[in-house]
Amino acid sequence: MTQDPRPAPFFIGESPALDFLNTVAMSRSVRYDWLESGADLLDWLVAAGLASEPEVAPFRNAGTANALEQARQDIIAFRERLRSFVDEVCGRELTNPGRPVIAEINAILARGARFLQIEATAGSGDPAARPLALVDKHPMTDPRDLIVRIATAAARLITEADFHYVRNCEGPTCTLYFLDISKNHKRRWCSMEVCGNRAKAAAYRKR
Ligand SMILES: [Zn+2]
Image 1 (cartoon, rainbow, N blue to C red):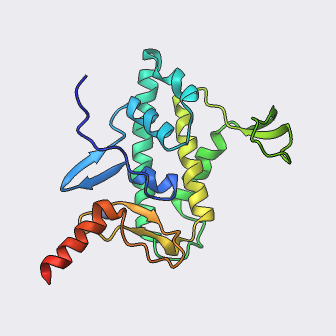
Image 2: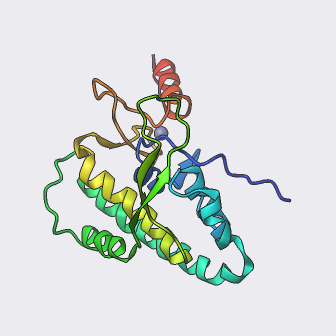
Image 3: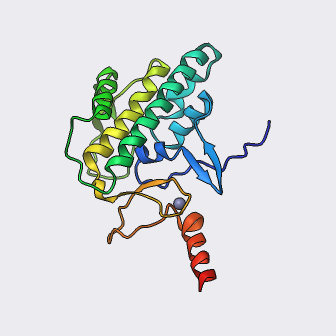
């Protein structure tokens, strides 16, 4: 097995949709992409919490490789359209629903299967918890269904996040996005370890 030169994918966005954009990142002038293969895509969806390993396991078979690669290409094309949209609206109020990317997300969501099922709840230890719960199911039968999970995350970002607080990291070459959920909304960096400390060191050298 060859060693993966990439660092682990970034989950600093406070939103799976922003971390989806963050699957392309510039780190010290090297461009990394964490969705370079079908296996990459499945690994990332599981790491992002947008799918479970048992759900994506059937798509790891050689028989679905072509369909998975097609799904991956559709997903990375969608990633760049979503990026343009977020680039344009970040830092502002989002009011206009008549944007092409929103129509595209709605079309993807309309394709996804969805139904309710009664299931036993796992012993949460909470005595007030009911033993049975009504659970929202979104089954995936084909690699084409993978994009529905990503579109759902994008739809949640668009409808639930305050876009005033969707920002780019201030690192001069950093492309990472995050939703600033800090109390005083003063978050500036993707992470203190990556860009925050580098900026502090640069300011120190200047002095
Ligand atoms: Zn950064």
